Length: 508
Image (tube, rainbow, N blue to C red; front, side, top):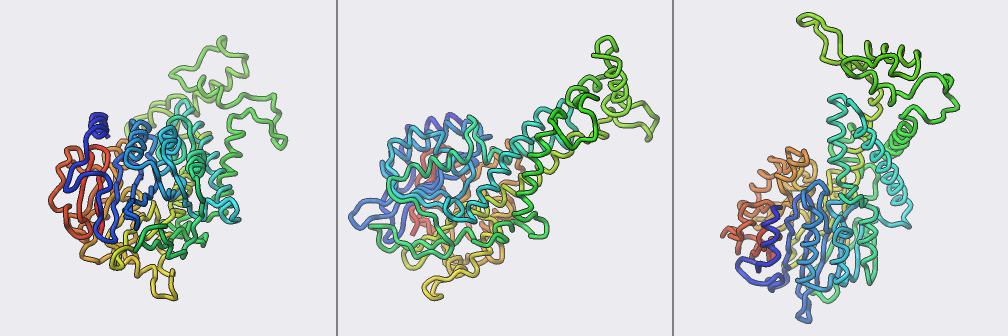
C-alpha cells in the first residue's frame, strides 16, 4: 500500500452511502470492515446488540513480512480499530501464518489500548489435544529445518540457478512463519492468546450453532479444520503429497544434513580420518575462480593439489569445446554439495499447505437463514470435510450452509487451490451472492507470486456475483469513489471506505 495513501487513510473520514465505521445494519444483518494491507487478513465484524450497542468480532490481524512497509501498516490498522472500538468481544485466529497474526506482535503497543474478551482458535492450536501437539511438533521441526536450509542457501558462494531459485522460493514461503524483525509465528500466535481477558476456546468441526452473547438472530457454525489427518494433507491431489509422518522424517533428515553440511562436524561413523582433507566450504572458494591461487598462497602442497583438481574438474571454468560440443561457461552443474537442500522445497510447500488446511472456518447465519462464510486460508482437504457435517439432527448440513451463502471471504488471497469448485463455489448460487478477496496483486508479484489472485477463480466469482466481487487492491479504494453497483445490491446493503486502508459493507 502506498505510504501517501496510508497517511490519507489515517486522517480522512469514511466515504460512501453512510458515515461512521459501525453504522446500523439492516435487521439481523451485520457490518464487516476489511482492511486492505496487502497480502494479509484482518476483518472487523460488528453485530447489533439487543441493548443498542455493538458486538465486535476481529478475525485475524496480519500481513506477509515481504510486503513493503507491512509492519507500519499493521500499526495503522490496529490504531484504526482502536479508534472504532476499545473492546473486541471475540477475537478469532484462523491459523498459524504470519499474514494472519503478525499484527499481534508488530502492533502490540496499540493492542494494549483494546480490551479483548474471548479468543477462538482451531482445535489444532490446543495444547491439551494429543493430535494438535503432534501437529505442533511437526510444524516446529519443519520451521527449524527450513530456517537452517534458508541460511545455508543464502550462504552459498556460487549457487546453481536451481539452488538460487530455490532460495527465493523458500524466502517467499518462510514469510508466512517469520517476520521482518525476527518475530516468528509462534510468538505472534501466543501474543494473540495472551490478549484474552475472558475465555480461550479451541473450536471443533461440527460445533454449533453457537450464539454471540447479547446478539439476537445470529448463529455461528464451525466447519473446519477437519480432525482427519488425511484431509489436512489434501491440498490438490493426495497422490502428490507426503504424509504427515513423512513430513516429520523429512524435517529431521533436513536438520541432520544441516548439522554436518559444513564438513567439520564430528562423525564417529565416518570411514575417513578427520585430519585428512579440508572442509568443502573452505576449499571451494579457492578453486572456483578464473585461475587457481599459486601454491605459495595455500597452506601446503596437499591443498594445492586439491585446489588444482577441483578447479579443473568441479568448480572452475569449463574447458573450451567447439560448436554444439562446447560446455557451459562453468562446471557448477557437476556440484552436488548443495543438492540435499532441494528437499526443503517439498517440505516448505507441505508445511504451507498443511497449515492452511488447519484454518478455523466459520459460517455466520443471520436474517432469514442467510450465511456469511469466513474460510481463513482453507484448502481442498478442509473444504471436502464440510460435506459430511450435520447440525440439529440433519436440519443443517455443510452443503446446505454453502448453498445459503450470500457473502464469502475468499481464502488464501484468491489462489488456485483455496476455493473448491464442485463442492464449494458451484454450490453458492444465491442471486445475492457477494465476495471479498484480501489480495494486492502488485505486492504478490513483488514477492514472486505471479498468479495471485488466480484468474479462473476471479472469473468464477464474477459469474456468480456480477459486479459484487471486491479486491483489496481495487483502484477506487484509493479515491473512495465507491461504484454504484456496490451500494444496495445483493447482500451488500451499504458500502463505505477509508481510502488506502479499509472497505466496509453492511451485509443483510
